[in-house]
Length: 310
Image (cartoon, rainbow, N blue to C red):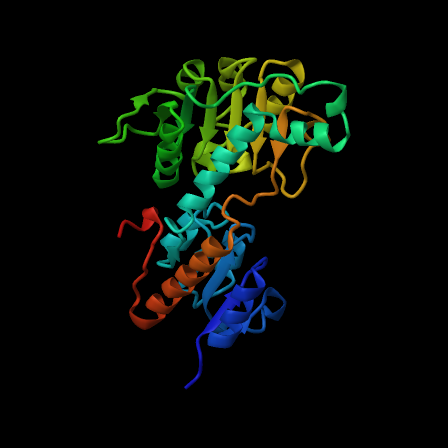
């Protein structure tokens, strides 16, 4: 019995790449178009584009299994219009991403990276490190109170923070104050954490107006997508002193990070690693393959994207 033909869209982790090759008749983009008609499924990740042209070139494509909670790399409307199923990997990475948000907030507010350099450069004997700000007891706003946003909120509560949020709509059953807009939220908090999905609906959602509302003592943490923050406006606000600091895991043009951000001591930069733990990546890999296996078996998905309405 022949095995289903699955297209691997890079980049994939070595483990996922190899497992797809072991379980299925795996093909890579270099094998197209000779094998295009054979492909029934795609396995990809957030960093690999599955656009309308690729989808159109695969006449028998039935499922796209994305290794990641975000799926703005996929042209979902085009896929769904053709009846192609699309899955992602929610929930399994909530804890890892939430703790990265807290780590970035603490690192910026307590100047962890700069203080580390202070010790390494031998400057401590000349005098103590200056006092820093504090996260405990501060006001923190969350843009996007989904599963990850709520995981961030519970961790902030443990630090004694007052949590508020902005979302497309109010979330039932949460004890946090709701702000009608990102600007309103920014004006009412000391720090703001961005956790919304990427895509056209959230493009530059955090713009100059939001950054100015957050203010010269404010800190922005972005663990969502680089597109959600107006990056030139962010750079300008930090350089001009209109924003106090930033903790960033994502950028507008990854892996390229503006030199202006690298030069700033009040910015902590991570290379898009919020979900990058051994435990999380193994769970994401298993869920990606479970979605693919389920669709091949009976046409269902374990975790379809919300747009599928299942």
